Length: 222
Image (tube, rainbow, N blue to C red):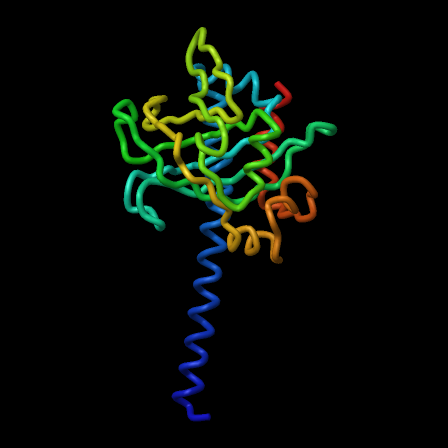
């Protein structure tokens, strides 16, 4: 093999490793940002209902950045993580990665980027989250989560809470498609895993997600 060929192979290997490292960093940033988003929501005075009832949720899906336009798969959407609560032990799982796309932005948002939390309230809702892809409002009932003093809750499998630049509301997630991010799940846990393995069987762990789990656990104990 010529020197040029050796150098070419070396450069390709280096580029592959570098790309893999960058993806790992971005994946961890998603987990870290999910923790920050969750803490912002539960600390806000207007999110009293979420704060009081998250302890009863089957799961919480946290999207730190929901972007209007220009996302990797087109349209409006973002990536997020889902944690599931074990009803027997009340312990929260490690996160599974998903995308959320085709979201409609209302006039009240007033910005291009929003933070979103979906509270999964029923077993039907949780079962859908364990599938590879489904549509909110078509395959499962979805409603806006109650915000502010005296807010009343709607009957739905999943409640959606959103904010942008400190404002809440104006985001319609009905019709949005939620899909698993298989590659991110496999990369984060170092082997081939399904959401069922992460969320229900608790077959994998990544200690870098412990701060996120701690934040959700702390909120559910209040």
